[in-house]
Image 1 (tube, rainbow, N blue to C red):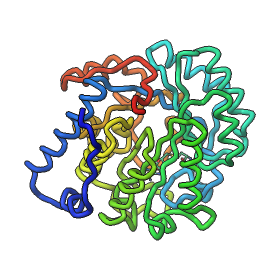
Image 2: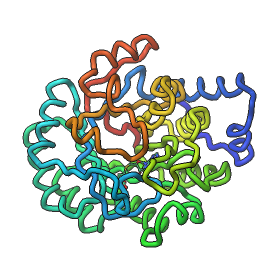
Image 3: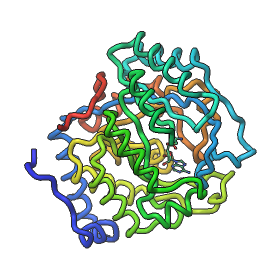
Image 4: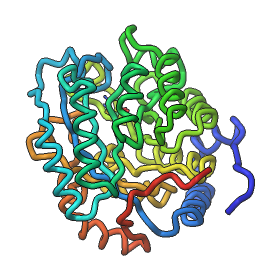
Length: 340
Ligand code: SAH
């Protein structure tokens, strides 16, 4: 294990994100995966993703769940549906459940505190991760008190001018960062991250993303390519590239040796080899989809989202066989943050 965390200079970051030197890039990715192996061995942590609702009161311009989208069939899972997914997930080996959703006013604090206590009662050896967007400090604290362990809240873009073009003006980067810091402060293992090559972003804005992450020191870092959704104003934009995403993953791993970093569904949705490319660039987590069929079909953040095949939680054995071909294997445990 290296003693002192290495941070790249801005010029090094520019070079990494621009160069055509494939040997240099392969060395960089190898360095990243060697660091991952020194911390996590050859183990890939798994999280069962339950997409609990696609109702949302926010208007994020890139996201297919945004409140303005009238061309989407809205659904919300009941507490019983979610518990059923967790029970099934538990029976096949999941020890972390991620509840992700739009910001659905009907799923209020009481709904979640009940849900969290019930899941913890049934499966006390499991971790619960929440990905429920912006809530009040009081609400975050209630969710923590109910037993939730982790919270994912991406900053989306650390460059204010980009953030403001991706979100309506009822959201601000400053308040998002405050929420992320608060979540960490009250004891959540906290995740942040950003979309790669979202509209208006640039190499310079991604350098700001990397530096914000240095500053926040999150326990989890999630990044994936931006992918257009046909029902949003960004429908004609290009998706982010697999190659830039994996270079960013390698940078983030080298700078954050202990962080839990997923190889995301978004990466695998634009590149059939995306899942393993993410792992070979330093990621150590995958989040197979444990949602009921109806949720899978309608939780469309972006177009052509993969949720079947190895993205489906049912295929854990096949997923393990797939990773074994590359010298990795799935770890059946909560997979908590191992840093200090
Ligand atoms: N409502 C929650 C969960 C959002 S979905 C929240 O706001 O945190 C989780 C992540 O999906 C978002 O943070 C965003 O980075 C990503 N996402 C949304 N739309 C996307 C798109 N069009 N392309 C790629 N990623 C997208």
